[in-house]
Amino acid sequence: EVGWYNAVLQPVFHLPYPDDTLAFVVLSTPSMFDKALKPFVNKERLKIIRDPVDQCVSHHLSHVKEKFPDQRVDVMFDYEMLPSRRPKFLAQTAAHVAGAAYYYQRKDVKRDPWGKKKIFGVCIHPKYGGWFAIRGLLLFPDIQAPFLEQPAPVDCVSTEEKRIELLEQFNFHWQDGRYRDIIEVKERYSEEQKAYFATPPAERFRLLGLSQEAQ
Image (cartoon, rainbow, N blue to C red; front, side, top):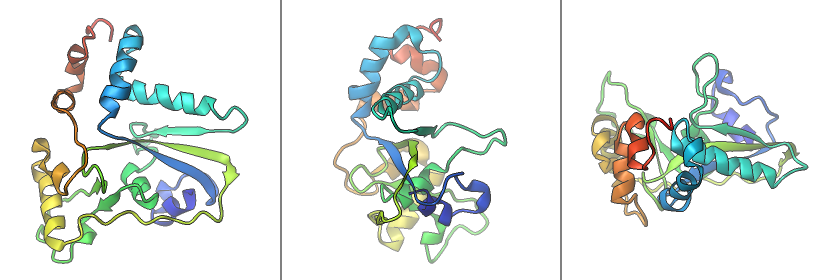
């Protein structure tokens, strides 16, 4: 529920809903590439005008909205910004409070070795490690869930050494993707998917067989 999220953030980041409002965090798993993105691109290739992944996620979440014709469903996407250039919601915090993935941050390390360096946190999923993405929020403003029990995220990188290694790899060597395998994972991105996400966004159209003109 929204209150779990608002409780851990400063008021400037709060979502403008009552605390007991029902909300869902939407994740994409490694199989999204083959099961959702490629079929979407094949079907909608002439309509793709911005990032194909963003449009694919938007397409599928609009279908979810249609399943609840009698409910108000608000959707927020991970890439959406407010006029202040702040993200509409903090995706990693949302995933953590929902129990979906553990958000490892500098404060989770007792013997901090980084001094004055800026260290960003990263979410790790107990099944997919770092091979997943947080794509959006589905909010149901008409549904109050005051008795919902908050699930704790699985602390799968539980040793000090591993947490330091994770944050080091994510902050200073993120391009090689080693941080994603900080734990034993059940599924990871295919080589094709890795190549896609390693390609600058403007060139991804070519990889999917889309011409730049379509953009």
